[in-house]
Image 1: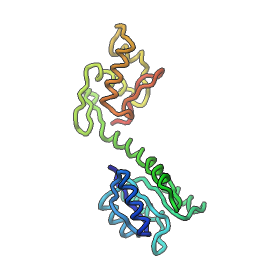
Image 2 (image 1 turned 180 degrees about the vertical axis):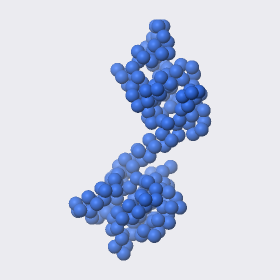
Image 3 (image 1 turned 90 degrees about the vertical axis):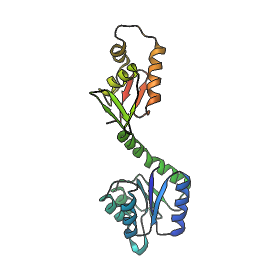
Image 4 (image 1 turned 180 degrees about the horizontal axis):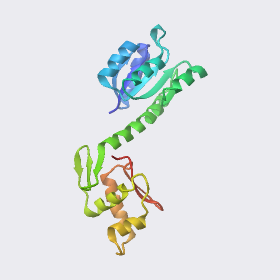
Amino acid sequence: MFKVLIIEDEPLIALNLKIILEKKGFEVTGCAANYKDAQELFCANKPDIVLCDIKLENNESGIEIVINLKNINDFQVIYLSSYSNDVMIDKAIQTNPISYITKPFKESDLSAAFKLATLPLKNKNILYNFYYITQTQILFYKNEHIVLSKQESELFHICYLSKGFFVPMHTIEYYIWGEETISNSTKRGLIHRLKKKLNDNVFSYCSGLGCKVDNIL
């Protein structure tokens, strides 16, 4: 579950955002209306995503708040504002936001923005959770050993050695079976079994290109 901090000075809008996001499965760690409260909530909870209004109470700038918070810890940012002039947008872009939603907002726009925000977070978690020890050829997920058959282990290993690039099927076939003639169903079965044990972002197959291991330590 990804954690979200809402920075919004209109209580009814903040409450509405909280309700929508919690229904979508996010953990809202709090709602702040100014930098002081935002900093306290941010430091206490280290949110993954910050949803921030640009114009806040006492004329505080949401963009400046985001810049200060990013000096503490990194996160994905989505801006929400009734202001959409070019100068404001250009300044917001400097903080690398995922999206800029104008008020009054549609729930569909909010959903789309959060889907974009969670994608790199999911990939980051995959990278962190999976790791492989080449010397022992043992694969782990969250410190738990993933048990692979001999051929599954061989398939993963040869792909890991070319991490980030597709390994052609003829190279894989020779590495695992040598000169032995193997049916297409046998090869497909092996690929399918390994994919079931892993994540599509870690192990993938593409007809004509081969197999690839990526997004792993």
